[in-house]
Length: 141
Image 1: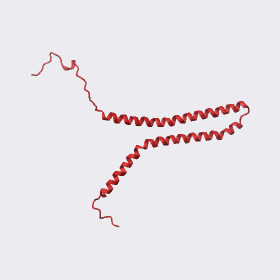
Image 2: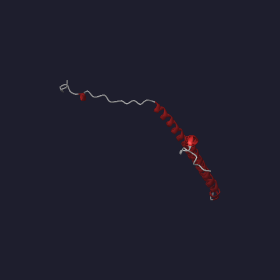
Image 3: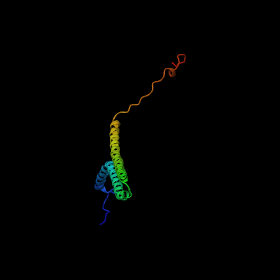
């Protein structure tokens, strides 16, 4: 089928309408980008934590087999639980930090829009009395 029947080189009103609609979808997608980025960072942190904990559980039988006394077993268990607590704490701080940054950015954007609506006044400094001129200076009439 030949396409030379179009008189408008831009594609006509349908192409403009589709371009506007797709532009709206792109803008909507960009508005969700910070949320998706925070979600991805949180998921990455959780996956990292799961990997570390799985590695620690896999190492545990080997470490316990090297213990020679009940005190060594107790110390190894204590080390395992301390490491687990530290890793969970660090991971949760990173995940909450990611979402906290998102909340701060959205608040700053909201505050920026509110301050943009306010009128900006320019102030000029008042002239000093000494720089206005001395009394014995000649003035033109």
